[in-house]
Structure formats: C-alpha cells, structure tokens
Length: 195
Image (cartoon, rainbow, N blue to C red):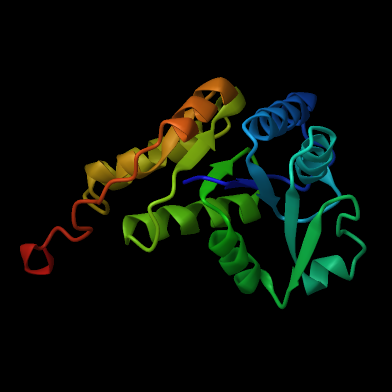
C-alpha cells in the first residue's frame, strides 16, 4: 500500500520555468491523493517548490538532507520533519527506507544517481515499489535511449524496462501510481546457472 511518495528533483533555481510548473503540478496531485511527500529536504530549486506546494495542499512533507548540505543553510524550515543524515549514502538509504514509491523529475547528477539506485535495487528485488520517470521536455530522452543500448547489447535484460514507467504526463504518472501492482522480476542474470 502506497502512503509516501519520494520525489527526486533538482535543487537549481535557474532551470526553465516549465520545470517549476511541473513540480508544483506534481506536488498538488500527490497531496490530492493524500500521499505523504518525501524529498531531499532543501529549500532551493524544484525541491522547495515540492515542499511549499505540498504544505499548501495539506500533505505531510518529510525532507532528508545530509549534514554537510544542512550546514550550508539549505535545509527547509517549512516542512513537517527534516531528517539530517551523516552523508549522501545514508540520505539515499533513509529516502528509500521511508518511501513506498519513487518519482524522478528532471534533475542533475544527484537525481540521476538516486534514480539509478532505486532502479538497481528494484532490479535486484530489494524492493517492489513503483518507479516513475517524468520525462518532460524530452529531458530523459537520451537516458531512455541509453537504457535501450544496454538492453540491445545484453548488459541488462529487456524485461527490466518494466521496472520503471516513463511518461511526460503528471496525470498518467498518478494513474500508474494508483493502479500499481508489484510483481516479481525475471532473474537478473543471463547465465542460467543463476536462475
């Protein structure tokens, strides 16, 4: 049962306005479904929009931020709970621990790392949570094409394209979330001795 949705997203304040609109729209829809919002805890960029919009729409918002980033004055002070972790590794672990679903908005290297980790953990069946890639403005087109290269060259099984859902629509993302049914994977390894 999904109660808390983790949003991975940018902490940049200078990205195109369309991404801020996207973040606001997503947070409104998550709140409307009475899900808690889990995010990176910062008071800048798309993260701040997620937090502010969530709170304005009566969602419980929990941030998880590393001590080093908190010490720079980048921790949100408007949310229900701010969890401060030792480092980035423990931040990701906490985000994964307290979340039931993951949505990646456009972001930088941190967002990419978080997305790759939850896909890998889902592939290895450490969790069965939904993973959604919001591919607005074609932002993730090249990444999704790179995934196809991995599949075609047998670095990953094509079946693993089913462990995440990519869409350019917030409404389709929410429908996927609400109707999500977890299922077991095929074995990760091509060699049958690992089956």
